[in-house]
Image 1 (tube, helix red, strand yellow):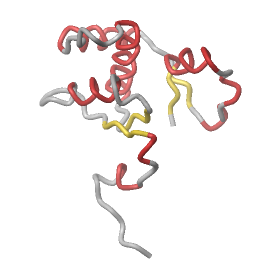
Image 2: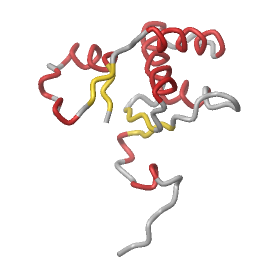
Image 3: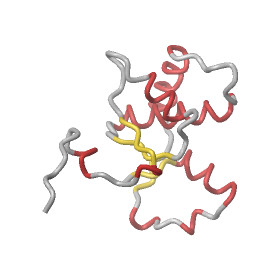
Length: 120
């Protein structure tokens, strides 16, 4: 599982990243390709006037990272902006990353094209 450096900076505001199981995660730096893709997405998908500019900017950075790296799923608690903008970016010809809200718990079907397993 990837851990974006953008998420690390947000996490570190309230809690030390050393509290995370870092040995089980691959740290994903934000690079030039991600920045270029982020700029393109921001141009195409304008921010809602009521959404905080700084927060939305970080959300678009995460979306761009997922797109550039071919990341299929993005785990989040942020339904109000990140999940909203991710859904908007999934228009035809845009990225295919799916959002997973942590409040819904884990479901293996996310990684099997929505196919649920039969009960044991």
